Length: 227
Image (cartoon, rainbow, N blue to C red; front, side, top):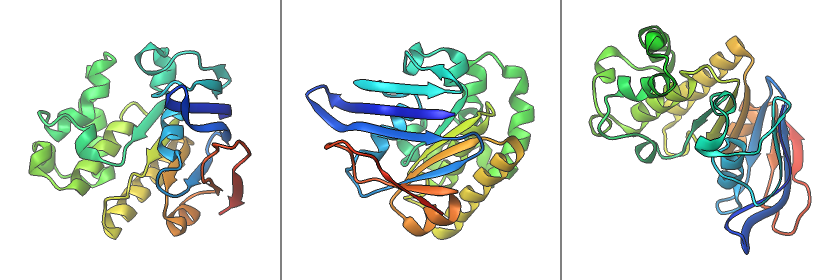
């Protein structure tokens, strides 16, 4: 279970982005977080992905209370979550070929021996050809780069995925391909998914349920809808 209970978070303690927010994602479940720009969806997603320490509240992952964030979090918790961000060019090292970008988490965790095997499996799964794997970010489109970023998020075979506006900058065909790749991975592994967006139609077609959230600066619970 991925669980956020009564979480308050922001970037200055006196100016929280939201207060007293709660959200749960069960193993194997797909939950969409729906809301307008500026309501704190991305901040909540970063808290859920252990990338942003909340000011108050509790975060639990697979029965473990999270007490440290980012690089201070235990490796077994950090590697249990794969994250895909909205803007791939801000999330990718421009010096790396796409193959090296995808393999980066394996090398960082001492699993170099798995690089060839995982690349061979993930590249076709996300729609990347061999010639694209040899290119650097400036030599590919946003959609191609986001495919590589999704493969990077999956390369450690995480139990949880957090997708923060993953398809917001992409055309319909690339969106469909990336959603299909995520769903194939989830069907194979039983991974849980938290996906953030403002496209109601996409989230309600994609997810088991949606959470409609305008932010919690005044407290209160988000409204949940079965998709």
